[in-house]
Amino acid sequence: MKIFLTGGSGYIGKATISALVRHGHTVEALARNDRAAETVRSLGAAPVRGGLGDLGVLNAAAARAEAVVHLAQAETGDEDLAAATAMQDGIGTGTYVHTGGTWVYGDTNGVVDETAPWNPPPLVAWRKPVEEAVLRRAQHDGRPVVVQPGLLYGGENRLIDIFYATPGRKAKAIPCIGDGANHWALVHIDDMAELYVAALKAKPGSVYVGVGGVNPTAKECSLAVARAVGLDGKVVSLSLEEARDQMGPIADAFVLDQQLTPARAEAELGWVPAHTDPLAVLNGGE
Image 1 (tube, one colour):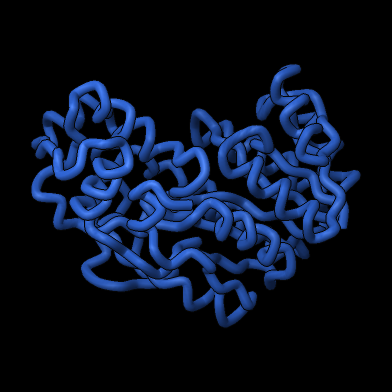
Image 2 (tube, one colour):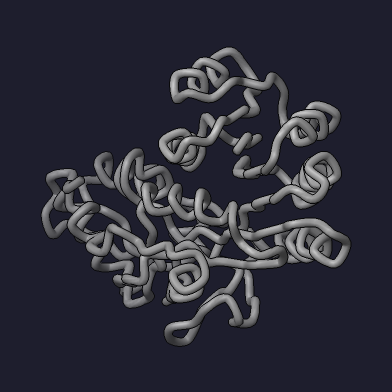
């Protein structure tokens, strides 16, 4: 299948291009500059020069494809919806896979699935109207699918490294918000890439959370990161106000208590997470 993909030079994008190519798909990937173009080319994708604001480029690339995978992180809901609309117009009746995130569910009060009510922190509140608009295309011969990744780990370990490991090395202690009893809905980057591949065959209007089904506490994760960077046992508790000062608005997402199940994707797509010991990976394993 010929796929057009955005965000190909990013954390999820690089893993997803590799997975798509490995499964025999041909990939064109949006590249906003020479560095991004070289990155996606090295992974086996053909670069398409442009950014999320280049709606004509997005539309034309989608029209050439049989499916679209939208991974790029927009700056605003308006930007994301404009890009999604251009690509859905271009792909027509082909599959369009849109990226959301599990933080939109807020605190889950136990283990939940995609039917849980939304209670997003301000950081991701803009996603709801975008995803609703994307999914409405299913009523008009479109094939929209929404994938909602949990908190990613493995590989470059992007958010956990930026907000936990890197500042922790400097402070000689890994941060933890409050007592860290809240749970994180984690997913390994390689499993997430495989879910995007599997989502290409999903029924129109489907929504899938991308989680590993193992939801350790934030404190357990901080302790694992501490061991990985040679600061065994050295974790410092931050109040939410202190965390907001240090991390910005993402602190309100890290403090969410989330437990989610991948049961729907397992049952409908045959996607089974291969990585079920996130603490071992965060502890420095592969």
